[in-house]
Length: 70
Image 1 (cartoon, helix red, strand yellow):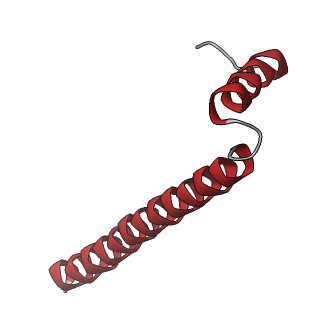
Image 2: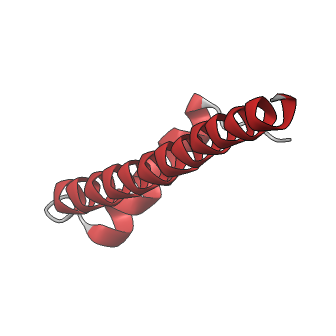
Image 3: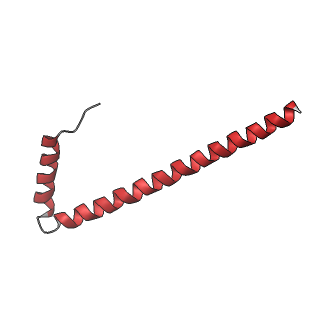
């Protein structure tokens, strides 16, 4: 898997400044940061839901196993 180094990041930033202009570049960075934050929050919520489903499933299995032993 290729890695992204500082030089590649610098090239992308330079191209973005040229394309967007120095005036709009900070605004775009803020929007991108907001999108990334929203995506991370959504992914975290999904992971928490899956984890809680797994915990509930294990709890139910333990109850069923205890009833089977009785």
